[in-house]
Length: 313
Image 1 (cartoon, rainbow, N blue to C red):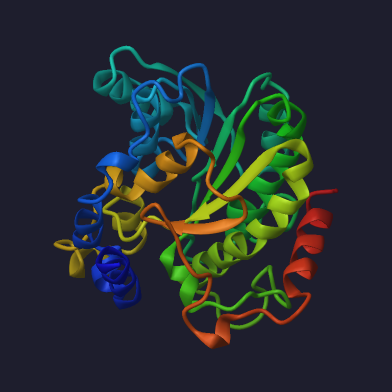
Image 2 (image 1 turned 90 degrees about the horizontal axis):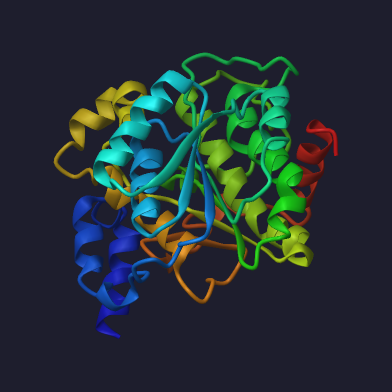
């Protein structure tokens, strides 16, 4: 009970819970909860956005557990440098790179067509543009990268995932989603003054709200769906996109490995955690901390219909 109360207190205070101190305090009770060595041996894991930060850290820890890891990246040259770092950290790693731009439906389709085996799909790719930008199909870039692209890739890979005995799809959200309501009436962010951080948080809210619906949609194929936020981690993406935040919180930020921990745990722990839930630091978390962010009845379903139509399904 004491551990539960401390965990809840850390979560609600945000600064403590999302920081390195929240992770390290909780970590003391996790030794018995770690996936055992070799728990992903024989599994194929795709990690999008794997060229740095959380994706690279996740790839290293997944490889340590025996997974065959595919670094799914936009820039293959950067991906190859990451591959070398993964091999340095895990000399026996079965790791490769593959190009896929999640914001580009053509690239997603081309990549999906090359996959014959997938057990875990970790959607980690992210962008935080300073100005509103659209992809070739006219969809706002953060929506295309965080929501439409992952949805399209997963739908294309459903026949392959179906062949796995324990398929899992994991979406890397952000604690910033707690500040945003579901933008179902303006998913493309066409109204108001565009702010990259707001677009990022809005689409991360979409990921979290859609996860229960996607869990239901994919359950017949035996595919589990999970969403998490990593806390505040010190990654190149944070330094580049939010330099002020990075400077102010530098002494509080988690390492990329600490931020990626729950994603790796969701991929590897047995038995599989309950599908359709939202997670942080290996525990299920509420979807809402503020009453104003709760969607009205039917809004999540409306958003899913919009997204499916946007990707041509």
